[in-house]
Length: 114
Length: 113
Image (cartoon, rainbow over all chains, first blue to last red; front, side, top):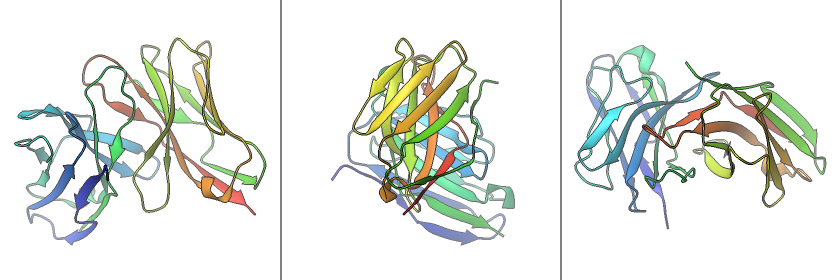
């Protein structure tokens, strides 16, 4: 089954404690992204990757890091989480194609930073 | 910066009626406009898209209309069903640069039995 898998689904952590949210896709997609979803703001792109070892900032990258060592995996790293990073996070993947508008999203990770 | 927004945060319709969800956009340079559906507890799911040089596109029970003159996008759902209850996002995509999807804030569709 074609899918994007995120882990964990729920996470409560304390300020400053480093964490990683994993993302894996099995569709051989080149393009992968991380979004955060906050009430009234829709989804905002944090970081994206056009292919292995190619990553770049999205609209709200502050406080986040990513890596793309393998095509299927795109982990999101919060080196020192803060309460304003409490949010619902989604990983998405798609083909790197001008015409491709269909992104596949994971189930989401609800993060609470206290 | 450019933005994609929505007129109504919540839309309530009766089962069997047609639904119309509206969206205003401001980036005239976008190549595609897209609708996503997000059910409770799930990630957004692609519904339908329309290229910027078109004004109408139909899918299964859904129709997307694009009015470039007033920068308006709408999603029409025919014979709305309980399974259509969800949050609907319009999004736009440019074919150049980072080709990110820029999402609006969403409209919640509630289908009353």
